[in-house]
Structure formats: C-alpha cells, structure tokens
Amino acid sequence: MTSAIETVAVCGAGGTMGAGIAIVAARAGWRTICYDLSMESLENGARQTEAFFAKSVERGKMSAADKEALMARLSRTASLDDLVKADLVIEAVYEDLAVKRQLFGALNIICPAHTVFASNTSTLSITEIAGGSGRDDRVVGLHFCLPAQLMRLIEVSPGLNTSERTLSTAWAWCEKAGQLPVKTQDKPGFILNALLIPFLNDAIRAVEAGVASAADIDTAMKVGLGYKMGPLELIDLVGLDTMVRLCEAFYPVTLDPRAAAPPLLRRMVAAGRLGRKTGRGFFTYDGHAMFGA
Amino acid sequence: MRYAIQQEGESRSFPTGDAFIAGASDTAEVTIHLGTALVADDAKAAVLVELGTECLGVHTGEAGGEEGSNVLGFARYRNGADAPSQLIELVRQPNSKLEAIEAARAVFEAAGFTVVVCADQAGRIIDRLVRPKYNAALRFLDEGLATANDMDTTCRLGLGYPVGPIERVERGGLAYHYDVTKALFDAYGTPAYAPARRAAVAKKRH
Image (cartoon, rainbow over all chains, first blue to last red; front, top):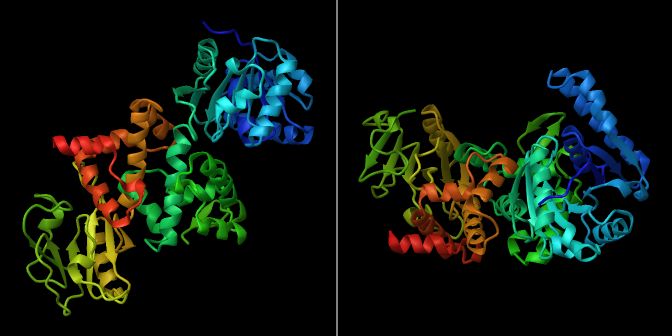
C-alpha cells in the first residue's frame, strides 16, 4: 500500500543538491515546489535548472516544448506555508540535526497528515531527525548522490518508527522517478558514506605518511582497480572543507578513528587549499585541466 | 633497457606464459628476482625483487632509515585469484638510487605497464587502502546494513566503481583477503586491518 503523490516539495532547493532533486521530481512529471530561505538562492537554483535543461535540449534529449512544460511544473517560494499541498517533502538543507528537526516540526503543522517527510541526510540518523517531526512514522531517508539529476542511486533508509506504508510510498516514488533505490538500515553514513569517508581519509593519511604521491595513489586506484576517479581527486572535487565537515558529522556518531579528519586535511583547509573550487587541493587546477601535485 | 629474470616457482606478477617473461634477455642492465634469493649487484642499473605481503627490507635489511641502494621491490597488483592488473607498484627505500628507479620504470613501461612508486610500507598503496574497506563491507554484511547486492550496486552507481566491494573481495578469494589483512594487521596493529569474520571462516575452510 502506498500513498498517492501529486506534489513534491524540496527544501533547500537553492543549493546544488536540492536543485538536482527538484529536477528529478519535475522531470518525472510531479508538480514541484522549490523552497529555500531566500528567493535569491532559489533564483540561483533556477538558473542551474534552466541551464541543465537547456543543455538537454541542445543535445537532443528533450524538445524545447517539453522543457517549457517541465519548467512550468516548478514553482519557487521562500514561505514554508506554501508547502501545504505537498504530498512528499524532501529536505536537503544544512546537515545539522537541530535544523532538520526544526524544519520537519514546522512542516508537521503546515502539511496534511498523509504527507511523507524525507531527509536527504548523508550522515545523520533518520530516527533522530524523525524524533522531532511529530510524525516519526511518516519520515524516511532518501539519500541522493551528487549530482542528483544525473545519478540514479538513492539510499532508502527507514527509521525505527517508519511505517511500512511510508517506506513503500518512498520506494515507489523513487522507481517512478526513474531512480534506483537501495535499502539500508538507519546507520551512520548508510552504505555509501560509511564505506567512502574512512577510505578517503585513509588516502589522505597515506599521503601524510609518505606512502606515495597523491598522483601515484590516484593512478594506482584507477589502473589497479578500474576506479573512474582517484580518492584524492574525488576529495578535491567534494571540497576539503566539506570533507572536514563530513568527518565532524561522522566521527562523533561512529567513534571510528578512520572517520576522524586527518591532520593533513585540516592543515590544507587552513592553508586555503580547498580543492577544485580554489584551484588547489591535492592537485592544482587551471579551469578544467588538472595537474599532478 | 634489457632485463634478465631469475625465477623459482610461479610468479604472482607474471604467471606462466606471461609476455613479460618471454621478453627477458640472458644478460641485461636490470635483474629481476621472481622467487629467488636476492643477490646484490652494484654493477646493475637496478636489481628488482618481487614482493608478496612482505616489505623490501626483509630482503635487503634496514639501516635506521638510511637504507637504500639499486635494489628495489615491486609487485604487479593482483586481487587474489583475479588476473594481474597492468599496475606495477614499485617499492623504494629512503636512499634508493634515483637511477635505479628510472631504470625499473623504463623496463616496466616499455612492457606496457603503468608504474607507481611507493615507500616500503606494508600493503604498498592498493592493499593498504582497499583492504579496510573490504573488511568494513564484510562486517556491514554481517550486521545486516544491506544486502551484498545492494552494497555492490551502491558502490557501482554511487561511486562509479566497476565492481562492488563484496563482489571484488569474493572474486579475489576471502582466504586471500584473510592472508593480506593478517599481514597488514601484524604490521600496523590497527583494528581496521583485522581480518573480517567471513575471511577468517573462509581461511579455515580453505
């Protein structure tokens, strides 16, 4: 048994992840409400969306008419009250338990009883987020991968009190959206980050321990294992400051020493070497070109 | 640059019939030991020792961080029973001769391999980094985090890996994973390298 979904709302739609999730929803045919704290950030998200679909039209993957119809399904608001008609709310707001609980608590008053709340958290507990919502049986984890509009995978995580109906509704929504859901328990980092964050930190520690250069470590993983991207190149893409924040969210809940931010990572952040966005991380960048460090 | 091979038993890097073996000369500037005891030869551009899970220092001896000569270690990365990859992990010591590293690199690259240089530390690059991840995936499987298929699918679709961690470690052999992680655990003593339960079970049944 699933609940019918006609309208999807995305909270944090001014950000890269939120804008991508909104694209996924609108592309699959749902009326999609994009919510964020300011209209300025929503305009930024809308520009990303417009550019994405313009590229789709340019590449012949979509007609101009389809693009217009799709854009018409997207609306923007900075007022939470406008989410009153949402059947599914997906939040992709700041990765902070108090912020997410406050958001769902407020939405619990605004939204109808049947509305399912989904969190895109990558490190926090769904059960803990749901605990502040007033409807913990209708809260579920839907963790998208960046960029959401291109990556099919969604980690679907029920909290301890999530109902079967909520899980079924979320699962069916993922499938109808053309995504590929995988079920995980509500444990720190689910599958992806539980495996990835310690691994990336190990790669940083290998550089710090003088095992090999960043370039050779990445080459080894690509040639030896067929990875598309080396771990240090990936950290540069994610952003070293973001990596520190991930570690700071992940380590306290796991107490896994491999999840703690390595000293080299913190030193590089202090030095302003944040990765691609500053032109220098483990590698240096000039536009789209990458040079070995 | 020519290379000569001294071999005893099967090589993990270059199994019987491997083209690299066929390309060897009787006399050469570089000597490669595949399973034979190291014989130092300063007249050679490089003397290369194929390594298993042991460090190069086991063959050369160490000297308070000052060790290094024209003797280098190497291993062609291979995940247990999988076919060898095209990657050569070339192992150097603090004072290894740069000319020896370049000679070794030239020999392997001429044969079509990609060479990375790493310090003489347990696990070199790949096993040092991926074995803890395989251990974690096997533990997650025991704990019911997700099915093996869902974990592998997540890594393929979410991270772009060609093969997920469970499939990879099982394909290479869980008993092999046990051997590698046991060696790493003995070297580093950190829990992340302790062989996973499923690997220990497989080892006992091996």
